[in-house]
Image (cartoon, rainbow, N blue to C red; front, side, top):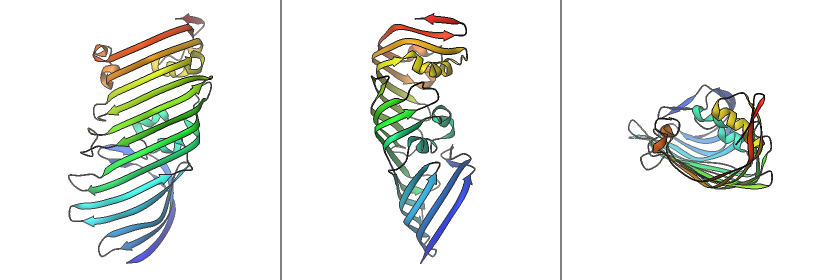
Length: 273
């Protein structure tokens, strides 16, 4: 056994796990002190820091070679980062919806990887993200979302697969133009996502019209007026049903929407709802 020091800056082409690509064309760097036992195929992480984008993650634990495959017992944490650095870790297909978000505030991120990576198994992965008294920004928001707090979590579940994976956002609250917005989100089964979404609050239409333009795929939408008051709105069902007009009836939805002089600027015309 011997100690190993290594550091490098590199670019990731992609990392594929269970058929999903992560870290596609991303710049990475690391600095590591590792105890290495080549005879037994064991690596113990003493002082390892990996930087992805603007976030630096401290990594500890071990990687060992077992008869069944490679055993991982790793943990990572970041307490001086931001949400855009975590978004860089998401699968490529989800990044296009979230990549323009940035944050400030009290940020914490932890993740663990435990188990065997072999021909018939992958490790158990759990991650948690927490933001307190933060601010979320996006070019698609005309005003920042302030006073933001929430907890988010991901697990690949009991069978460590896309089908048993779950992502949750709990107790999200923030202020949009001094109006409180609260939401909860749960997404299960990444092979055939089932969504449970809850929202309550007041949204100024001029603050979210760019999101509506993207959702409706209508570049003519250039502004908004009034407010959209959302009371205990919920949406539950398969994501594929939500985006298919012939199956939208299978989706459970409820709550109350109040349009307070709300409208959209579409081209040269203003549509008042």
